[in-house]
View 1 (tube, helix red, strand yellow):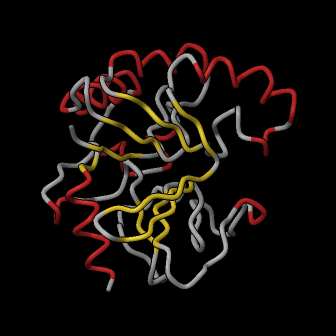
View 2 (cartoon, rainbow, N blue to C red; view 1 turned 90 degrees about the vertical axis):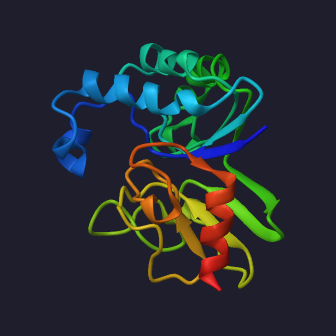
View 3 (spheres, rainbow, N blue to C red; view 1 turned 180 degrees about the vertical axis):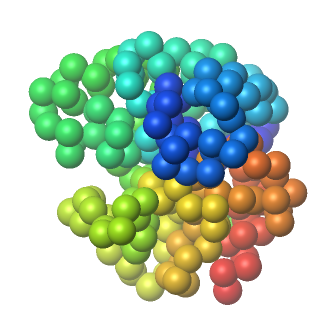
Length: 200
């Protein structure tokens, strides 16, 4: 059994090819969707997959179906583009919570864990950093307690590490090849542990 991690897949989001360097690899969103599903085929039925927010864009009910092609027990940490996140309003949450629940075994706003002896908090938003020039969603960012490693998505950066000494980016746009993870693949827990150890 292996634990796997990713974030900000944005299944179904054609414009993400313009906003990130995905456009250098994929000509169309259909090509991106198909390759991402193929890249996640390394996940076995008995494995666990945590998506750290922003699973799909566009027609959520339709695009969530891509997760039916991915094996494993799935956990979603809700992101700003997940329509069941409270920042999108009570009506959207009521409508979309049961739709997302068809594809994810668990859903949280944050999740605390101990991984490789390190205290970790999975949350979509980093303590610092954003995909836009100005930081957004401050009310949903966790506070720095001086010891917990924040594992996040949201920024769409290629970099794993940032100016903050205790946060790690696991978004699918991040480049984990230094930890032997190919581009646009899920991150195994062994690689995440190595990256956390490199923070210190």
